[in-house]
Each structure stands twice: as C-alpha cells, then as structure tokens.
Length: 423
Image (tube, rainbow, N blue to C red; front, side, top):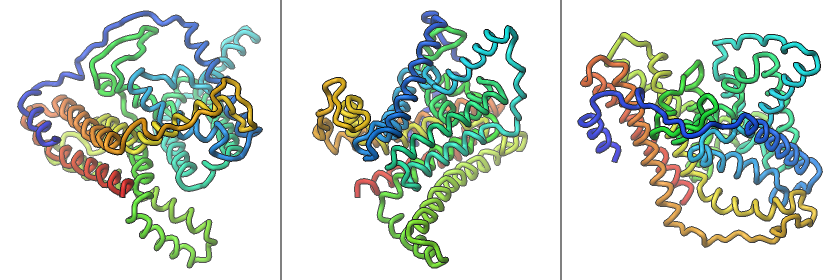
C-alpha cells in the first residue's frame, strides 16, 4: 500500500498543494466560550484531584486512574483528531494563568509585568521531558495504580505550568513547554476544523499539520511520542519479556533490589525504544540530505517533522483502541461513584463493561487500518513538503525514496507490536 501510494504521489502530485491550501471561516466563536470551557476544565481537574486524594485507593474503583490513562491520554487524542484542539479550550492551568493575569490587572489597575522572552534554545525540550516522565509514570513507576500519588503528581505538574506561564507568558509557555498542550495540539492539526482569530474554520485534511511550525526539539518530542507508545506495545511481547528479564537480572547483580532492578530495566527499555525511533528518523534524514547539500540535516529534520504526526496518531489508535472501547465504558460507572465509596450520583454506578461490543477481528481491522492510513498520510505530507524544498520535482521524488523506507520501517514496527500484543 505504501509503495502504491508513493508511486501515485510521484506521478499525480507534481506541485505542492497542502502548503497553499486555505481554510474557510464558518462562524465566529464568542469570547465567553473560552472562559466557560476553562472554568469547566478547572472544575474537572479539581474534582479528579479530590477523587484521587480522598477516594478509595483501588485503581479500578477510583475515577482518577481510568480518566487519566483512558479518557485523557487516549480518548482526547481521538477527540482532537475529529473536533480540533479540545484540550486548549479546557486546559485548566492555561485557564488559571489567564485568570490570574486578568485578576492582577483588575486589582492593581495596571497591566501584568512583561514576561521574559521564551528562550529559542529551549524549544520543545520542556514538553519532551514531561512526555517522557508521563510515559515513565504510566509504564514503569507503578504510580498509575496509586490514585493519591497520581493526584499529587497532577498538582505538581499544574504548579510547574503556572510557574512557566508566570516566567514566559501564558501563550508562549503553553505552545512550547506544556507537554499536553503540545501533544494534543499536534493531533488537533490533523482535524478538518480549527479556530483562527476567533473564527471556527473548515480546512482540507492534513492542511493544519502542514502549517505547523517546527522549533528546536519538535522532532525529539514526536520521536518520544511514538517511542512511548511503541514501548508499551513491546513490553507486552515475549521478546521484551525475555530481554527485560535478562536486563533486570543484570541490574539486580549490581546490588539493586528486585523492585528497583525492574524499574531500572524498564526505564532503560523505554529510553532505548525512543532512541531507536530517533535513530530511524536520523538515518532517513541523512538519506534525504544525500539529494542536496544546500540544507542541513537538522533543518531537514525540522522541515519534515510534521510527517511524524499521523504516525504518532496511528500508533496511539492501533495500540490503545481496545483499551478505549472497553475501559472507556467503565467511566459511566466511575463517574457516578468517583470516590469508590458506594455512592451512585447519576444512577450508572452498576454499569457493566460489554466485551462483545467489538470482535477481535474488528479490532484487528481498525488497528491495521490506522497504521496504513497514518503512514500513507505521512508520505503525503513528506512528498508535499519535499516539493517546496527541492527545485526540481524529480529531486523531490528521489528524496522520498528515503522517506518511503522510513515509513515502511515504522509500519513494520507497528505491525510487529500488534503481533506481540496479540501473541
């Protein structure tokens, strides 16, 4: 499928289309909508933290873990791809930061102090650190099973975001340093809808992500996004279980206890997976640069970084669709009894999960379809961008031989991870 798509693009796509596409305004968004959504986000965040601290410490009976790792981490990706940047509207720390600035101005009668200029060298590095840390919490630490610890981490993250906003400004920090704003924002650019200058707009598929600016560490962020999901899949397979056990034994031989040795070995596996994804991308960019010496490899990496977004999305859907479909149903019961204390606020506490809602073959088709569609979309984005970089169409096509190899490699990895998970 990828080869056919590559040949079709080479023959039928001789000039850039996505770079020049336009969006169509549909309606004006009232400014009060943002304040209302922000208030809802703050209230929801506060309620979830309270549930984690005051509720039962059973991960399956407390609302917080399921909400964070199913609704937030997975469901919001799907919502972003369909409806646009949902998280930006409900982002609780962004809402608090904006509210603090407004209150300061109202009380003091003067504008808030001018924030520092965000350092260009930082780029997306704070967001990268947060993404890897979240992956570590979810997959390695064991904290995902402890609601009170999760609540504490959520509060710590919110405080860190508020400090970043205080230093560099709400929008500057949100667009660069807030892990989840960057994460969901990049998927939202795949959506056919967006908001520009307080107007809801419709746009052709992939146009939004093609217009996304890349800064320092954008590539690292996308490689981390793919790597975290890839490691979650690999950790379920026999190959990593064997290698991980051997690594854990080696770490234990250095004097670590069993629990610490497990965490160290899993951490190494997580970082190594991200490094492998980055290495594949680096090799691909070195190949693309063999076509031209006019652009540095780092600059090529930034110019083509947006093509990794649909791949990251495909990995999320392929790996987590069953979690979303099955465990997502548990939210109906948990939201009625968020503390796990036997309450039934909405009459849905006894709702059971229907495991027959989708068959195993149905999941397989969705997973494989997501991988294929995601990687074809990545090829389209890369081909369109190549036509803007290389002066001759034949050079652009020649550069994409390497991108085709990268996409085949990522597709093969994705299919292998599915096989590992279903073995």
